[in-house]
Image 1 (cartoon, rainbow, N blue to C red):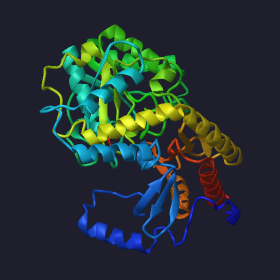
Image 2 (image 1 turned 90 degrees about the horizontal axis):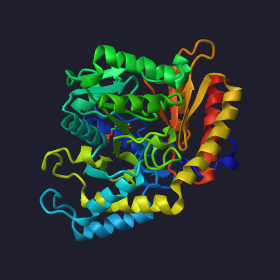
Image 3 (image 1 turned 180 degrees about the vertical axis):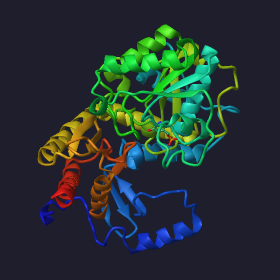
Image 4 (image 1 turned 120 degrees about the vertical axis):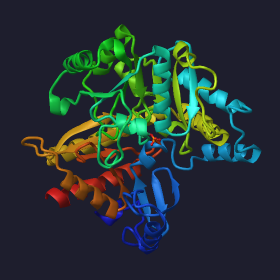
Length: 442
Ligand SMILES: *Cc1c(COP(=O)(O)O)cnc(C)c1O
């Protein structure tokens, strides 16, 4: 790393620094060991693509707090909107005495999600809660129970969504039993199954028909790009085929766009790229610039099939979070955030292509928009290399770049920068990744 390219990062101590280490000691004494920390650097301030820690270091952010702060951390418009709302009222419970911003968020979601049919929305707090409610709605509408999910899928950490999530460690290990009537079926993973979208879908459909029965399925819940599973992009046509099967068999297609939504992939929603209009769509992460908010949006006949009072919760659709969402959505529309994601895609792809040419251990570059990843494995037989992946990640962390590892085999580095990240920050982060590869693989 040449000093001259050291423009965005500011490293004044080792990472983590002394203040962070002190806080980590307090964390261990006060907070459950079950709450893990990937990079124990305590943050005091953050802005577009930069995280400042309590020791005065500035790190480059390629994680966006797990794909949440797409509009940039502490986006000024979001901050102004939520501060204004917080001064007026912080909570009244929409189910008791409603307010306009909740309705406005619903209207925005109905307008922005795929399809121009009549839609309704319902707001919740977390992604897992949105997925749980999508399942409730699908069961109420269809009168059926079975929920189909896919291998490598991730849907959350509550009891129902743990059962829907594929990966045992760390998400499910020791936490069972899980809810019944959840069936995990084969996904499309082109690098490893070599199947076309049609072939992979035929395999999945055949398993559903044999093991569940097509007329028992309430919903197929899938991520159009699998997030925690390793940023796996299904082969072309896979999602559309499953959508067709769902339509013909009376099941609903639920697109879990909690990670892929809100311009992250270069479209408002990743389903658009597949040419699919889901019956229901779950959103969260990118929706409100960092405030906890989630939603289920979909066909009016499906969403209205639930009895009044059947959906809700004390905090669901909190007014401060709704104000943040409206400001975040306005920002995304004004700056053409989908265009920003596509520009980031081009820049990252150029860097990763050069890296892959030099290092055959990068067996695949995948993802779309500002949701990109590399899979690291043996170039000979594709044996996953989680140890080297962890080393690469640790190198990036030590050198002031926040990267995230994902994938059921722990061998995928994913890049989820804020859509507002300045180009020099992005380039500098990938300089560090280049160096990490040079150090790790020689
Ligand atoms: C993160 C995520 C969830 C769970 O969201 P939480 O807010 O953590 O409960 C569900 N589905 C997908 C696709 C996700 O990426």
